[in-house]
Image (cartoon, rainbow, N blue to C red; front, side, top):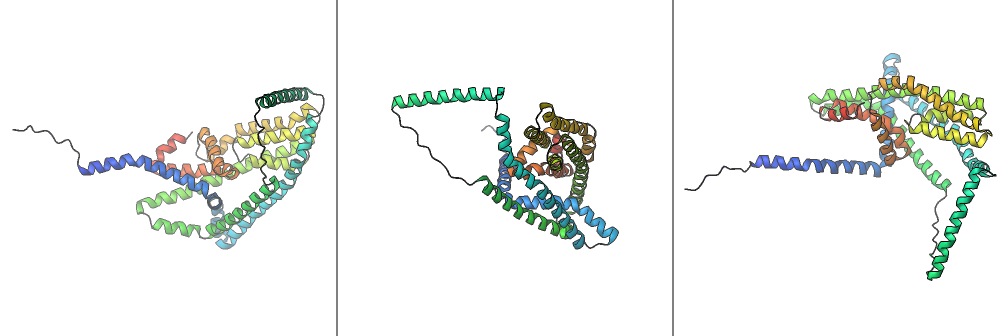
Length: 368
C-alpha cells in the first residue's frame, strides 16, 4: 500500500495571487520611474499646466466670492485676476531685469578692483599662480624628453550667454502665456470639470476627491497669503536698510530679498551672498560691507522665531528634511521653476496623502 502524503501544493488562485504580489513592487517602481522620466522630458508642457493648476487653486476662492457676494460673472472676474497676475509679473520683471543686467556687467570690474593691490589675498594668489606655472613647465619638460607629441587643442564654439539667455527667456515667455491662458479657463470652467469628473467615480470616493480639492485650495491660499505678508515685510525692511547704508538700487535688493524668501533655506543664503557681494563692490570699509548681510541675517532670524511658526501653523507641518530634499529634487527636475514650486507642490502632495487611507502612512512619515 502506497504511503499517502499530504498535498502541499497550493491552489492555482493562491499561486496567481502570490505571483502578482511579487510583481507588484517592480511594476510600481517602473511606473514611478516612467512618471519621473515623463515629467523631466515633457517639462515644457507639464510645467505650465502645474503652474496653471496651482494658480487656479489660489485664485478660485476669489472668483467664487466675487460671484456670490457681488454677482460678478466668472468670465469677468477670472479675466481681471489673470490680468492682475500678468501685470505683477511684468512689473517685477521690469524692476529686476535692468538692474540685474547692469550689475552683471559691473561685477567683473568690481571684482578686479577688489583683487588689485598689495594685499594678503593677492600675495597668496600670486604664490599659487607661480607654483602652478612651475608644475606646468615641469610637466611640459618631461613630455618633451619622452618624445611624445603635444596634445591637440580642440576649441568648441558655443553660443554666448546672451543668446542662451534669450532662448531661455523666449521659452519662458511661451510657457507663461500658456499657463496664464490655462489658468483663465480653469477659473471659468474648472469647477464644472471637477463636477463632471466626480460623477464618473464611485459614490464612496466622491467626498474624498472634493475634500482634497477644497483642502488644497485652503492650504495653498493661506500658506501663500501669510508667507507673502511676511516676505513683503522682510523686503521692505531690507530695502530701507540698503538705502540707509548707501547701497545703489535699494528697492531692487529689497524686492530680491522678499522674492527669494519664497524658496526655503536657499533663498536666504542667496540673498546674503548677493548683499555681501554688492556691499563689497560698493563700499570701502569692512564693517560697512558686513552691515547689510548681518542686518538681513538678524531680520530673518527674528522672522523665523516669531512669524515662521505662525506660517507653518496654517498648513500641515512637514519635516524640514523632506522640504530640503524636495527643493533639490524639484530643482534638479525642473530647474529654478522647480525650486519655486517645491513647497506648494509638497503642500498639495501632503493633502492628497492625508486624505487617501492607503497613503496615510506615508503622510505620517513625512509629517513633522
